[in-house]
Length: 69
Image 1 (cartoon, rainbow, N blue to C red):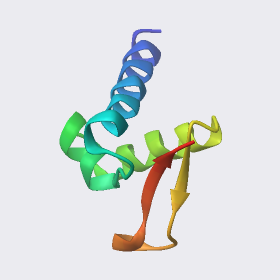
Image 2: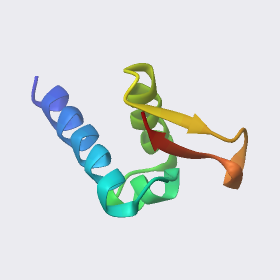
Image 3: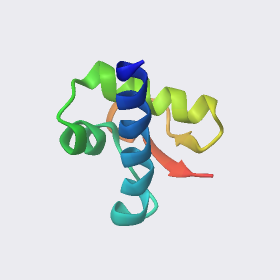
Image 4: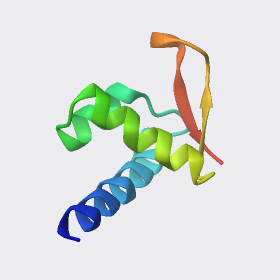
């Protein structure tokens, strides 16, 4: 349970990043904010996208960012 609460807290922090960073948030931004690995940042962004809170723009690598829906 504790791990789920921490994950939810991190996802809320990612959502607040959209207000600070503006319209675009990249995987690197999430990594820096939360001090997590690339894979963990990707997992959080994917979950938020599945929850229809954000959407991915771009297809690959440095050309990918996320916008709030």
